[in-house]
Length: 612
Image (cartoon, rainbow, N blue to C red; front, side, top):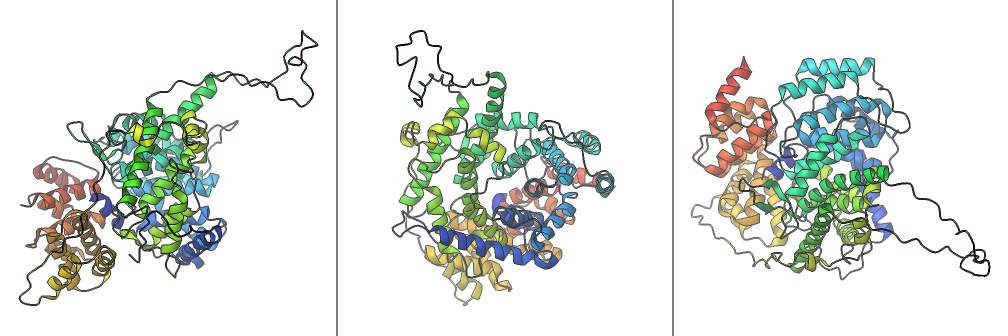
């Protein structure tokens, strides 16, 4: 996510597995120490004017800055000042959904009125980049031309502030941003591809931009329609990519429950706004006019509470049912994970399942709705205990494939119970459905989802034996990984991903070729992450290698490096004999260009025009 490493996780450790905790949960002091240690580790990357050491580019920087601010780091801290300068400078050139959304979220949280034009500019790119289905893909718009960037920088420098709204209303749209948005719409072709991981970040940013004068109501309408119409009624979840061409929802990871709940929350909040506008203001309770002086009901003694007026419940609508269904499915999914010996944070977690991306998604959803417990399950107690027990001695978390900076930011944001969209949560929590769920009343999860498929208990890992008559070191290393226990698998995979030398590359290729299921996906992800460090010339050679897994990983790495010089290489890979390589090349082209053509010839024709 955010940049090259997380993009791979979506295009496709000394870790603690949490089951029903027998040991006591983390104490408040332990949680405070963990927050402090994580925050200090993040600050070390940006203190004294340093430019940071994160491997996720400006997206990782934004997450680190958000975590610092949520942990109470003052805005004049040298590390925060460095992050702010980096985000402001980088915002002008951002055109990918993750960094655009995260830059906007950071500037909103930082809270400087002088950043309003930048926030409006980033919001314009998100609005234009929304798909016809109401979601977002990796790219919002095409790469920002140098002339546009120069004009925006000059305009904002000369007239940075925009006129503020009166009586708490949003500020006016900056005149340059208004013209810029029109030009973006005129030049952009709205596509239909998207995914709910990109979308949940965009949803947060779009909502935050609203109070800064961005015209987002139509975008919010499409978000509401998207998540109201693509929920799987059997599981309560949403697919990673919405629906298939046949209209069937393939439920996604547990994190997709949280993405859907976040999308629905914007509709609930706007519904509450409409209610406040149409309902008459509540009148203060006043004693009834006495007409029977001897009746104590009409002349109650001083201090006697007045009788409560009956409240008329608001009728339920489909959004209420969708929210309850999603929380029911999320609760039962967590129960499945615990039943299968896993939990909120696991050594075998993949993107959005048992990793820190899921934990932060869970925290955001529960905080927005004000949910302390999921039908008796204390998500914060279990999650914070897992985080406290798995923190490294240097204050960082190195769980899953996102790298120390992003993982540590996710962990600190979870532990702080960060509430980045306070105006959203305040409106949602006034909703009767949210009140019912916070109280733990209402139908049970199993009653709401009686036909939900139950995840089977996974069988033990089957050891795969690889013949190795010549004693090849890469095959021996791959064989060790394929035979590894669940507790050792993550460590061996991380070693192969991060250690220099061609043997580790070949070991990952062999592992990805021979593994299956979650391990195959994890090995593919690790290979793509590793290949990101290769030179363009090396990647071009790998795109022509004999091993299909190496070609596939190289295609993903070309996109993850965000280097448009690789566009012709990826176009050539559209003709690969392996279907997985072709899909990786197509996904890479969409990520690099924001375009989506059906055939290699169409891509070549488009690229020939672009070069002129």
